[in-house]
Image (cartoon, rainbow, N blue to C red; front, side):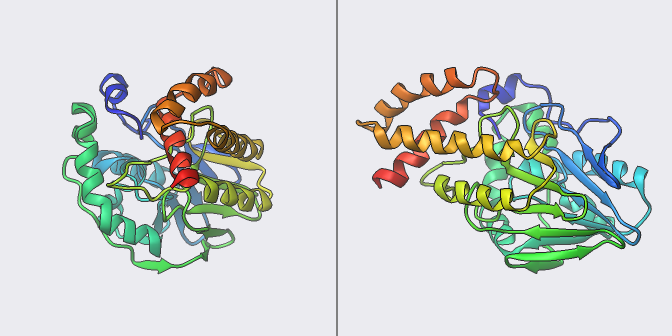
Amino acid sequence: MTDTTESQSAPPPVISDAEPEEVAQNVYVIPDGRVPLVPNVGIVVGQREALVIDTGMGLMNGQRVLQKARSLTDKPLVLTITHFHPEHGYGAKVFADAGARIVYNRSQQEELDEKGQAYLDMFRTFGDAVAGQLEGVEFVAADELYDDRTSLDLGGLAVELLHFGLAHTRGDQVAFLPEQRVLFGGDLLEHRIFPIVPWFPPHDADVNGSRWIEVLDRLEELEPVVVVPGHGEVTGPELIGQVRSYLQDVRARVSGASGTVEEVKAELEPEIRADHPTWDAPEWIGFAIECFYAEIHG
């Protein structure tokens, strides 16, 4: 996600027409190209089925992802999403219409049911380019729900879907391939982008920075070799530590600061921005400060 001003001046949030990049055997990524509101999309091709991870925003993007998947395989498709936010899962109707089996964790489905329309309405205010991608969006329910973890056997290729609880959202899901050591982290991880902390009280405050840090510890225990973030370049396991260090640093600074939340933001935002001069989307610094401030001060 991004703010309204940036979205109005940014490129349209359209999935790249580039060929999917193979990051491990039979594991592909459609890269986001560092375009705001475009995610990295995963395609994992087994001998029996192929898994698509995230759809992009809206039906046109979903159709492009479907075409890219079909350029790699004619096997039956399974769709999952890393979390319910529009740029990650609002093209699911395309896959439902194409006969894909849709698998979400229970918290993802609940968040989509509770908040999906409100996020659709909010994103439509982000400028004509974003609103255009959201035309005709219809929400679809998963065919299969799981709680904490499930394993998909695609035929000679296993993918674990893991849900560790509240962090970036209530329903964050990662996809991990234990044999290839590939991790699709969704928006628990961003590369050279300030972590997206969707702290929007009173409408949505289902994000917890300290729980996020704990989840990152769990991701590190998986010992991935290739890490696909929600946004930004595919990289290695060091990204997990970088994101964790950032969140820990913000928490420590907020804990040591005094004053109102606005005073703390005015003090800390410039300092934090200066410490990460090459990172994009600095508007998310303030949201992280507010989130930790509420956690620490109530």
